[in-house]
Image (cartoon, rainbow, N blue to C red):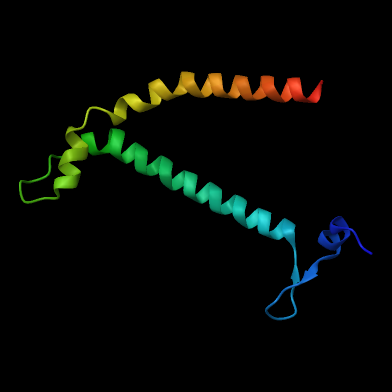
Length: 103
């Protein structure tokens, strides 16, 4: 009887066609998908927080969504407030992994 690790290493038959299932290929594709989604999210945030303020004011007949984003006072403060919280979260993550690995 083969172990599950041997099945992953040797590849399994896919249900459609005769291609072999390669978990490394799937992980790489998911990594690229995560990178693309995070890049899109960053660009959307930068537009909402900074770039829209540099553009001329939309007309009265324009999109109410763009006008609301332009007049909002929240998004440009989000990054300075998020950075210290992220630093604390990374430190706590490192600390918990350190405690787990040395116990």
